[in-house]
Amino acid sequence: MTGAATDRAAGRSGGRAAAWPWRSAAVWALYAAGFVPAAWYFWLGATGRIPGNAIKEFEHLLGIWALRFLLAALAVTPLRDLAGISLMRYRRALGLLAFWYVVMHFLTYMVLDKNLDLAVILADIARRPFITIGMACLVLLIPLAATSNALSIRRLGPNWNRLHRLAYVVALGGATHYAMSVKVVTAEPFVYLALAAALVLYRPLRPAILRRRRRGRPAPAARQG
Image 1 (cartoon, rainbow, N blue to C red):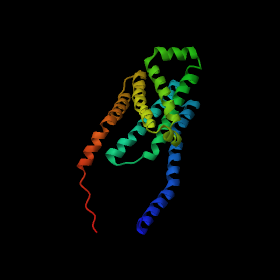
Image 2: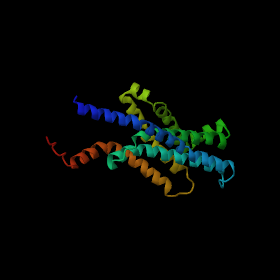
Image 3: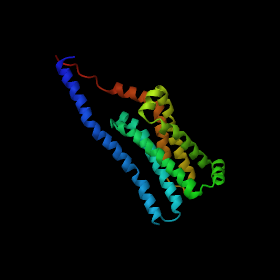
Image 4: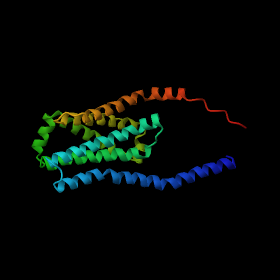
């Protein structure tokens, strides 16, 4: 390696080292900001500022944010591919935020809505399709959250990517759960359903899209000297 190349490599390494604390801080800031909606809605409910059935509304809002975070996590790859926007360092945080919001959504349903009445909860899961779908999504998210770490990536190897493709199933299931749960039909649930479907469809189409984009790029200019 030449001296100039060594200097460039050292500069890149130093740049990465200098940027690392800021990147880490940005991820932790995302976690902190991500839990603000849950804390805010809990405070509104605890102080009687949520109109109507506060428990149901709190439960609903937690579910909505879970779906938003999950769709945001899955949108990271298309954004990088199609728009050149790289948010890869935030994808894990977005996915874990989605998981914890699903857990809070389910705990609100179990504890505050159903008062831990297991007979009623099990009957709901068995008889109400949208709750069955929601429960299935929670179960599928557990191994994804448990393996969202560097150690699991190393140990599972290629199987890690295969496992985490379940996130697309969860997104589509979560959007379906939301659409089936609403009593008043509005456009919002179907917007989420369409976004989830688009992200699911993008996955198998991605190789062809990337090949077409590569063919459309101009050839790099030959280096001088």
